[in-house]
Image 1 (cartoon, rainbow, N blue to C red):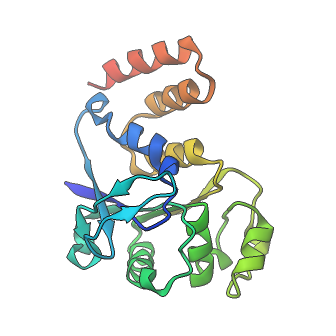
Image 2 (image 1 turned 180 degrees about the vertical axis):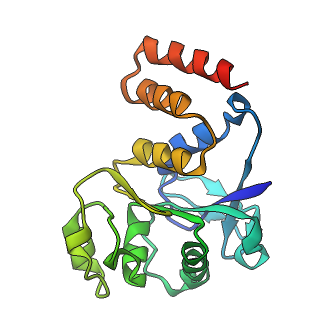
Length: 208
């Protein structure tokens, strides 16, 4: 079983991971559990989120074996410009090279821009101006799309308002559930309508 690693860092926007965590914990709706979720930090030292929560990583970045990585999720934060995050960004580059999913949201898209990752693939962020103003390495404006989340191959990017769509694209990329289940899940959480909830329950039963 492979791991989906969520990177924990000080000032992390903890709410941005809410929908994907909900989706990943419902793997009981699928035929098999393909992934387990683990948190990773530069060290195992606790971090403090923007929401005021203290979180302790399950492992440190140097404990990760690339062959066990199913995906690397990078949440937004105010501290992505700090040099301390270089090890996880090096891991992100390795994952992209090995066709392993890397999903970045909000401030983490700026980190990918600084790496040059967004210079040649379709992407989004909080705004085009956000990337051009704060990244000296970014020259990918022609690939920018004004959407809340977008996928290009094994790289998913999202704005700070795109947590739900970001989660949907991650679930689709990892093929954890059928399209029917994912569409019903997304429909319910984006509208709250009962018919989507019933569709979700029905579709999940068919998967078992």
